[in-house]
Length: 189
Image (cartoon, rainbow, N blue to C red; front, side, top):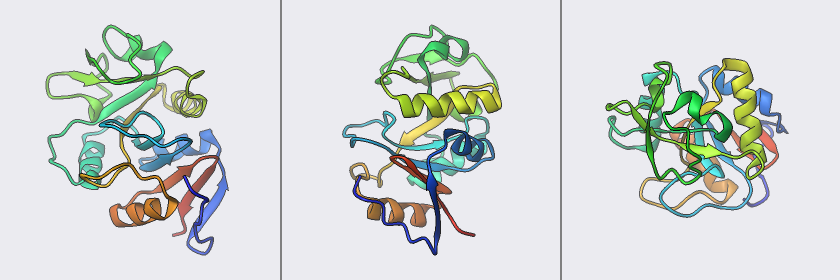
């Protein structure tokens, strides 16, 4: 991601605090997450993601509006690898979202497909320390080390890899904040 050029008159810009981001997510905010190297391919794998709490069908609807896709499209969960078996049947490590597993908690409405399954990405905190820290902080607040995770990209186009594109995307689609590398940014209201 290029240097951050958020206008301080329009945005509050502060050092990344995973607990603060987790609180925003818990409170229903939707965050654009752009950390480290870019991503390429058909899935969000924790470097270019739109993240949200996994608890309501309203979250699924809002994420699908942001993504400009059909309302029935499922949202994938991302969770700590060591806790995957607690939330998803089998609990296999799956960093590339290759397998479907049964969702074990009725509380995870936003990531549960109509057949009761989800295609989960598991995160090994040693492989992705920042995402591991966020999932841990969210788990400490809510009891669930699981978030909604969908690709941070324009519909039909590649992932967002420039902060100018991130700002334009967020303003167009109503994101509530951004994590860009080691900075947390929220619009001033």
